Image 1: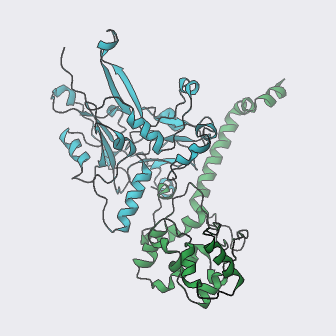
Image 2 (image 1 turned 30 degrees about the horizontal axis):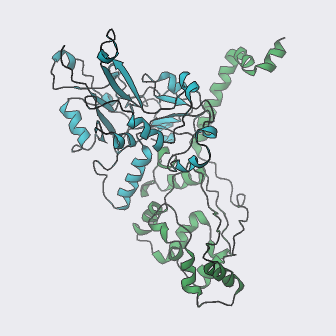
Length: 280
Length: 203
């Protein structure tokens, strides 16, 4: 939780979900992404740029791998040996998986990245010293480092007016990553607090899910049994802290759910639903 | 040669320091963690008085609050329902000052702004950094409305962070409003539900 908590519970800080974790969670935000619905249009990525004050770095820096896209679409060819129209592209939206037992957290020397009671991997920009350990330890490569003061050039004169005031503009030397739109979660939680009621399912909608034209992204709280995302996870028999070794062996076409790098036991919060393909 | 090298690339010298360097880093880490655990970073009282912020009209808070007993939230009405307390619109001032004290020079100044249809360019005094998420409404709900604290005494709650405005004319920053100030209060009021999570305030 807080730094206080991290210092007092350093030894069980790495306890995974299968051991009960170390948190009294208030929420556990999670996603379900249906790859069958994803058409690779990049709307989610664009929405993320607009929502989270992401800097456009330009072609040269992009080629060096310094792009700041918190949400990126990875493209795969199903049949690489064929010519272009027949190759059959598959798309996979990739963002921070908000792991339950995140590899980025314990390596941070200043506790700038830590686990919140909402089950998110927080990144506190003020605390970050830019050691980049977290990025190097992330198996998903979804942490992005500010190598330059991008704000100097990314938003020329009138464009700084479109920056989102609910999230800070990061300076050089700071690591950043997808936050599951924590500013939207915060706003909804504040509203619920003022109205003395719990947060409802479907109230928090991250920018990517909002922009998705095919509604491939479902966002919600897995601690809420009735939420859409809980039902999807249950339907595809994906559970936190459980590695479904046998699922693929079963060859049950109805169970399409999987989590990327589940075998690393990082316990990601994003479930993907496999794309349905006709056998050729 | 070695000296020259070190001048061009200070990093090379540091790498050669090897074990000693690592030890230094480790010590730095441990000491910084121990310091962070204490949260003792509030400057002593009286040392953090803000600079005088010149306002377009020298607004006397003392006359309104102390002499006339007007509630803070009569003018700063957004405090209980939004993130910011807000500066009242000129129409609110004119609601009273069309008839009250119209002969005073400061009111005549105000009336001129009103007749020119221009808002007085009030300056912000209590400004937290852009990376801080602070909501007035949640603090007021917890500290006043949920505790059934008498609303007519709300100025005592406001004074936690804003100082005793009944004794000031133009508002002046008298509390540090830094992270230590916030965290100290949040730790003391854990049972009121004050969160200790970084991402509750840092954005």
